[in-house]
Image (spheres, rainbow, N blue to C red):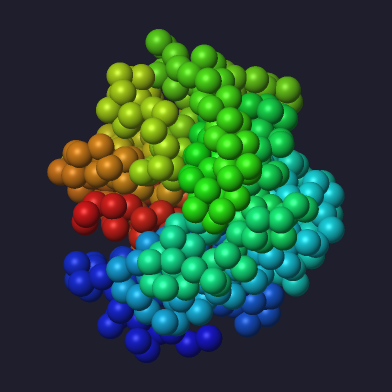
Length: 403
């Protein structure tokens, strides 16, 4: 699939002068159209060794396709629209493929089969994120007169569920109470990130089901969303850190004690503007962001060595994954640093976001490549190269900051 000749003609006008946006869009599309990968699947990175990320993660793909949906909403480019149709077909096949943990399976081989090696499973944020992305795509298609496609291919109101959105909503509604792994695939429990995206999927899913004429399911999803919301309010708000990462940990790392993690921030970004449970300007959110930024400001040497930019942000302060082994020291991640920029724009503080973009530009290689991490001392990139999520995060943050 060759999108690149026409690519710069269809990107949003503001971004035609943003070199990194152009490159991130081009490279995300490349990672979503590798010739040896089953159509519709997205490799997390082209890296096949040290580390091997040449797999498709449901979470990463859902977020990547959401970024493309956001671009398509503005550009209406037919090549991107075709990619989205292929993705819908791919996910429909994926949902009907045997895996060790059903729809909670996080990772797939490039031929579309489920990965069956040892892994942190299930990961129940994936189906919820996929539903959120597909519902947005569905609503845009309805607005363009393609309701029949949405009714047939995306939703479908029968039980057992056939359409991918319906399948994901049913899975989320029935499994949200069960411990599962968080986005870093390291700790099993009940986590803010997973629960907020599950809440949001069922909230927008209830509205979508009603629009699709599936009133009984709409009421059920609304009821379960309310129950998740009550759980979040009672168990995740904290006077000490603002928002707790996990309310329950049934299998942990044994050394993650600070209670600080960037995943709550990612959750707030990934569910905007759909969730109405926690305002971005809530005092607990403000406290959380203050603690998050100050923690990483003091942790990473590059924040003091290279001043005048935004704060380099990592996953969590005790992180031991350096992009190659779990016996090293964690570093800042591009997607985490960009998450602060996106949040600042969403919460009405666009001016502050500039420093976060400056930090990302400074630590990239200036050709448009964005890897997974950048070293906390030298500032050079490391870990999986050309991480798809890094590029998706740049696209999403840029679009949010231009609205």
